[in-house]
Length: 124
Image (cartoon, rainbow, N blue to C red; front, side, top):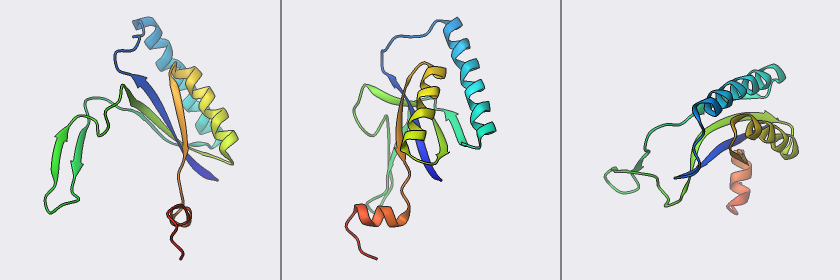
């Protein structure tokens, strides 16, 4: 099975949930998480908080800066890592997650080392 990253996307300055809507979202997300465990699709999940820091150690010294790496109005508010037999199954699971948490969910497969080599034109 392939592992997929399901990123919960939020928009800076976007509409806010009422306290009641937020509680329902948390409850529904917990129920969704339980169903992932029962189906054997669960690997990991979590919500992200706070302002990120960016570390750049490509040079001789690590440089730390505040704020996201890229300038964007969208940001990752949480994530799931799941296992699914194929992209279509992962997308179906993402649709359930989107419905549960009330946000857009982005789906991306993790690559194996061989897939990364092929994507970068490197022959083994």
